[in-house]
Structures are given as C-alpha cells and as structure tokens.
Length: 155
DNA sequence: GCCAACGTTGGC
DNA sequence: GCCAACGTTGGC
Image (cartoon, rainbow, N blue to C red; front, side, top):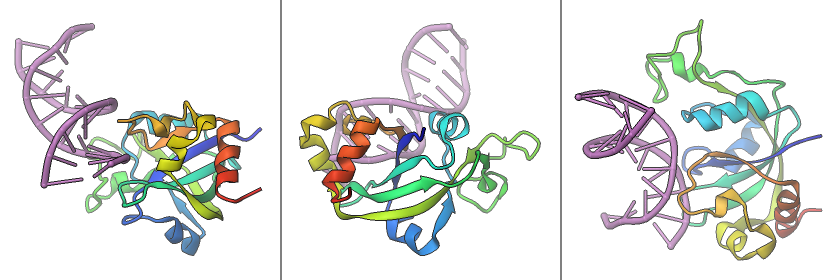
C-alpha cells in the first residue's frame, strides 16, 4: 500500500527537470525534524511523490516522482564542512540527518499551480494550501493525489 | 522586497 | 519548561 507525498524544491536549486536529467537523487539538505522523521519513519520505496516547485514565480506541482530507497540513509552533507548543510553536532556514529532517494517518474501534461490547488474544493485540507505551512515534505491523501494527477492531465 | 507564520535557540 | 528573540520559509 503506497503512501503519497508532496516534496518541495526550489527550482533555482533543484528543479523537476534537474531530477529528470539525473534520474534520481538523494533528498539531502533537509534540516527540519518533522520532515526528517517522515523520511526516516514513514517513507517507503515505491511511495508516490508530487514534485512541487516553491519560492518561484509560479509555485506548483510539476510532475511525479517516487521514493526509490528502501529506507532512509544518513545525509552525507551533514559531515561535509564545505557544505551549506554541514552540521558540526552530527557524527558518523550518530547521524542526526537522514534522507531518502527520490527517482523521476513522469511529468504532468501541465503543471498544477498552487493557485489552482487553492481553487479546487476537492483539495480542501491539503497542507500546501495552508498559509505559513513550511514543511517541505508533506503527507498527501490518496484522493488528493489522484485529483492533482487528473488536474495535471494524467490518468 | 515585504512580511506572516512558523521552527529553533538559548537564557532564565 | 517557558518564552522572547531570532532565523528561515515561501507566497505574494
């Protein structure tokens, strides 16, 4: 039974096209405990992901991805002093931050903008609609996932 | 660039 | 353990 997620990325940093080009990527750099716990405790290989562009001219879901790792692994950037995500309080023996692998799945025929998400009554309750909701990895209900896919021209 | 909302830090 | 101060996110 797959679970459904929305994962935010700033397109200037890592866009959906970048994921397409790369095929898959370690979702590193997450430094929020709630998001970390979701990756560590809840995300499973095969889970479906809405890939969302944030902090850009037109925020919205670009397409689909999947969780590709069986379990979360230590985030290598936490050990790298030259990384923006370096965490001096983390050790290899007791890593504080973990991440999952995320693989490209398929693009939407058309992106589903946040504006449309907010307009759609069937999507009421989606976390991403909530003002001030900063969680970068959000659980999504199956019905909401399916609806977003349909709005994006899939299935 | 503004600023609301939220998470984290640290003094007490 | 409280909470004020601070930093960050992210829509607009």
